[in-house]
Length: 439
Image (cartoon, rainbow, N blue to C red; front, side, top):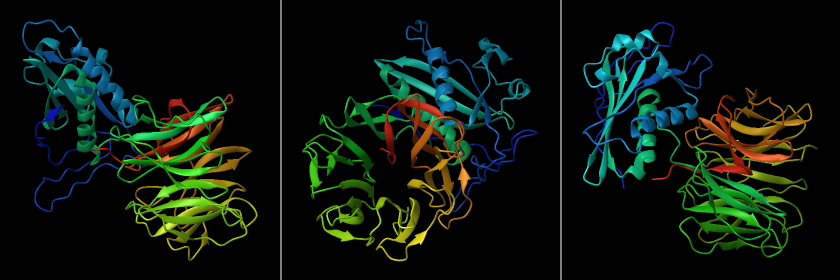
């Protein structure tokens, strides 16, 4: 277990140098607010940051190589976010022998580093104690200071925790390293549900049904995953706990029982059922199993997702002749067509902030990812690379999208920043669903 000391925040009225945008940090106090740089704005430029080698106390040798491991991995995780420009160490002017003496901030601004990370570690009995600091080199001030105590095996957790501190200090929000992405992995003619973390590690298998298993969806508290499986021959709806125990078959009407999104409060689950002869959308009470039918159309209605406030539902219907995205109230009333451009628009995913809906659409015969406002305005194309781009799913902070990219006949899970940049492949798989934060 890693323990953390209290954060020390000392920077006020922070200014980026020269050609970078202005950020103002108001002094913390009762009712005080902070203004952070909008990292999703078109004019955003990456934060230039330098990370020095860590120093070790005592005469013992650094057998684990932590002096370089920590800066290497801090750099790796910061680069994953897509918001940082890591200054190469060969550009450093500081003498390593002076690393624990007074910092010459001018040496860092000269090489273009507006921020600086320094670290120190020591053994304390069987524990490892690591101290990390974030500085604003332009102001010459300490921004964050953290001490972590744990085992050497906890080094990754320590590095990720401090990356979250850096993000919090500069953007006002922590990172998404403490989240998971559920996805479908093909295994021969079958498929199973697995999970993976934002950095592409800690893959875990959720199902082992040796059948076609599809459409994973997270409960808001991250304790449950729902999905559809042909384990017993029919496409039935299941809910599985992440802490073990057998999955429960919740809906098994003859025909399709397709998993949909959970409501923000976890009290309802959206389903697509064909029990009445047509694919319609229902809301199921997650406790009692009571079903409320929401759509009544001869057309196909599928892929329902809640708005963040739980008041609206986006879904896909071909009632106008081709698959398009619609929005309705949570009780099924006031249905409105959202997408007007493109002949095939599916897989809506509502952003956590409620201001955008991501979806897939065919353009020049290939699926690409788009976003649109919930009022139907400002459609934006996010991807244009070769291959198919499908099944978008938002991160809980709304800064990233997970999706399926298909190239060379292989489906892969990828993540990218919400503006379409910084695409990174995680693993083979499809149909990703991003969790909320885990405690």
